[in-house]
Image 1 (cartoon, helix red, strand yellow):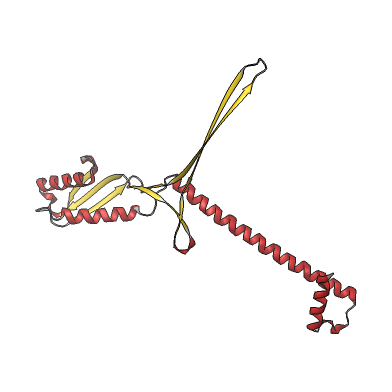
Image 2: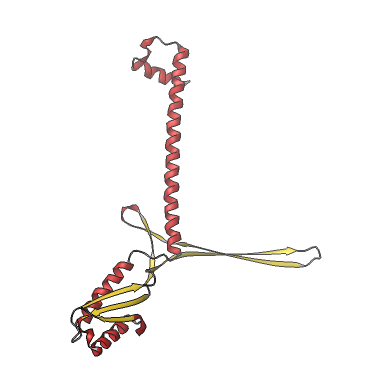
Length: 207
């Protein structure tokens, strides 16, 4: 009743009662207004819940990808830096001339996140009908990726280790590769730097 009286007074101030509406009509208008307000509040609440659920799903998906060891976007930079460094150092070998290097990978960079592990151990003693006792030991392990707050209010996983991708093969194109001795020196240099076997390195003469 107090809400109805307040709304009635408000309508008077706004000159909405100049239409000489009856009390019943005015009450109906107030009820319609209240219903509309309630629908708006419910819609806002639903949108907030859906936004919260979407954000939670995004974090869970990120957690799952990290636990699966999915490669991140540092692999292309890793290859590019290796290729540039090798091209630079190999070109300094006497007689090698201009050198270009191409490297292929078996996989991407694997990231190892920090995890919060919890172990629960439950022991239950059960008696059977013959009077004997059976011990049931239940052990459960739960681990979750640890996230840290970053700038902008976002969260990111705490990375404790990054494993560089395995090198699949290396192609070197050098002006001095027409000399078999220089070609061998280039191949050995690549094997030494990348710690890979000879069959993964191929050296060609530059045209």
